[in-house]
Length: 589
Ligand SMILES: NC(=O)C1=CN([C@@H]2O[C@H](COP(=O)(O)OP(=O)(O)OC[C@H]3O[C@@H](n4cnc5c(N)ncnc54)[C@H](OP(=O)(O)O)[C@@H]3O)[C@@H](O)[C@H]2O)C=CC1
Ligand SMILES: CC(=O)C(=O)O
Ligand SMILES: [Mg+2]
Image (cartoon, rainbow, N blue to C red; front, side):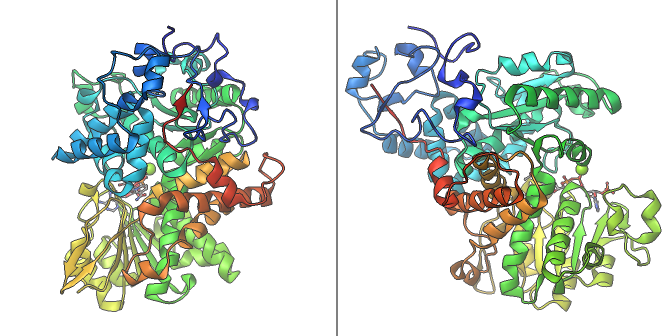
């Protein structure tokens, strides 16, 4: 009875097969692991066949009380389980009942993480079938609190930790991970976790959470996902003084030391996993530099800049049905000119330019941004970071948001500053004074950092605002009417976009693919949702939405000549759906 998942380097495990053995883009499940039905038997592969006690302790194969009588006999499980046999559906109901008993969201988070470590398929079944209820637990806002308290709730390490101590050895560290056929890596250095700032090594909760969504929402197989935290220290004094802090106890390395470690990581990734592995870099203040440096050599994608841009553009395009006009007829004002703000602004300007054939320099003039020093205007140009410079339009200086709203008179107001309560009553009232239906998007996460609540947006505008936020808000009653706020979160985009890249075997991400993803999302908002004032489809349809996004993105990858999975599948939507992981239990022979 060989134990589970350890050191597969020396053996010929399925998971250790050379990546070229997987078909084309790779998520295709050549071993039939995921597509096995009740009458199709599969082998519980590890380095050898897991059985007995080790089978129960292996989260990839464990089915708990769902092991059948036959399986209990065949796999030495007799006596190791109580006599009852429960179907997966009943296990799911029981666990959801348990989770709903917890009053504190962090307890729900911990219960779900425990489940993932015990029984991966059941974890994903819960997540997929109860996505609207559980998304706020495994993702924003609860994941923010989990990162803040990671040191004390930490039980078993998840993902790979690569710190300055591993400098010179990163390739070896990657080889320590038990699976070789990785398709998606999500990596952070923990410096800008949601709107919560520098959480150092504890930022690991974010790659873990985002990858859970790749699987649950986008259908990328869990074994193909790798969460990574690059630990170069932290400037968070509270963490540095916390005796339970799990990361390097030093100030952040910057400059060459940081760049060298990142470069070693990116080089090792390509060497170990090849050119088609998607590296999603996020929640670091170094994003623009990293995207510029690796965008032409690796398949890199950033969800703070690119994913957020695609989701917001989709929301705005869909909202035009409610607020009227074409994209280019609207005027945008952002609070926050960082990664999210300038990334969204650029994609909106690009789409306007495509639609109107006007040069990008012209369409950018429809978009204004406010940063911590006020409105970005031409007189500030020399002191602005490079990514803000395209937005420095002619205007006299304006110090604060309210004055900027009054001066610019935008039709769309977008919050991406990470600072809560900044869309004050005066700001919303001003928006409502010159717009019949102002579009207001409070993107900052988690909920505590939201620019305003849904209730505030609706009540301060007498129910006229079209509202969406980064973290979810419950429906609100205003003037006797129920308003359902939308959630504008890059979680709509990255799982489907990632799936599209993986199934087409794409080797680069282009802006055109982001526009394709955005268009597919906007196309999923139907009349029924518009009637409720929604500008995004419900998350409960996310697997279908992700398949549409994946198909559109893959089609664009083929069109641009960056897809390597040949020949191109005829029906990309069907192909995307057929590649998606499903968490139903397999039957063991
Ligand atoms: N809904 C979603 O899907 C997503 C939401 N976000 C959220 O957006 C927020 C920002 O993220 P990101 O862009 O990556 O962060 P950055 O740190 O890159 O940018 C923050 C920007 O906000 C500005 N800012 C900070 N404080 C103020 C203030 N008091 N008044 C005006 N401007 C201010 C900063 O100004 P300066 O440049 O002068 O320092 C900077 O331009 C976070 O809360 C994050 O959670 C991010 C990605 C996706
Ligand atoms: C959602 C996300 O990526 C953020 O808040 O930064
Ligand atoms: Mg930033």
